[in-house]
Length: 245
Ligand code: NAP
Image 1 (cartoon, helix red, strand yellow):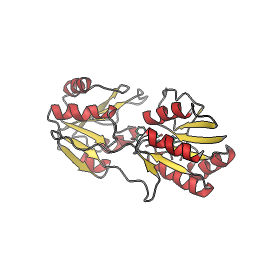
Image 2 (image 1 turned 90 degrees about the vertical axis):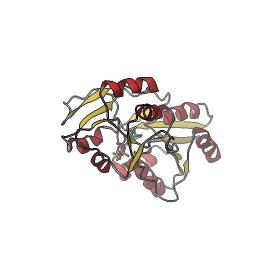
Image 3 (image 1 turned 30 degrees about the vertical axis):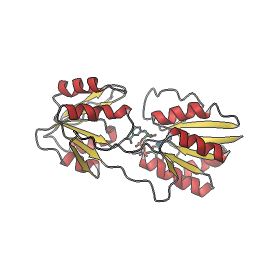
Image 4 (image 1 turned 60 degrees about the vertical axis):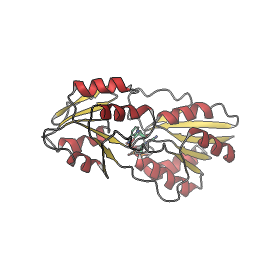
């Protein structure tokens, strides 16, 4: 029996877990950071919360006799992916990173590519009305620009008021192109700020922004360390798991 640790936080991770649960001789353990109050059920045993950095994850791998690791975290969950790679190396555990391909620029899309959130916020002119879903961790960057109105879409309501000039928009994905157009019109949005998350479901906001002629400020990914074992889709991840068994 092989025990697989699936690091989740994405729709792909949940889909993968459902399929792994069907494989004989595999015992899946799913892991979530605990950032969403009511996460969708991955359908396999799930633990929630950080491990305590590389040392904590290394202990977890040994204590739970983890045989293989599937890192299916979000492409921008850079810390977790790096910790997982380091703990895998320390314990000699095979690891695979499942990372969706990046979005390519559509012909009618006006992309402004930037290396980080700070540059994304700097790229907007005074008086801009930004719409973003870059996570609460990006709030500090927007709070520095009181001359910009920011709508930050989040899944869970915030216990705290919006820090600075803007508001939270509480909604759970997925969103259709039509719904995104409506929301951008409602908030009188002038700029969309996105991470290059990839995947069709989240791409609707880019299509909506393009149809309204809005500039899209796109924060580039930080690549995984050179030599990382990476696949782009669930089928390839399942093939790798089969090889490990
Ligand atoms: P991060 O910066 O890479 O990780 C921060 C810390 O959160 C990690 O060091 C780890 O804590 C803990 N952590 C992250 N993912 C975990 C998991 N699957 N299981 C257990 N602990 C986890 O991650 P983030 O950007 O804050 O994202 C947090 C979670 O939200 C990730 O699981 C990610 O897949 C999901 N998510 C992120 C984004 C995004 O834009 N970043 C978007 C959608 C979903 P310890 O060091 O204590 O182990």
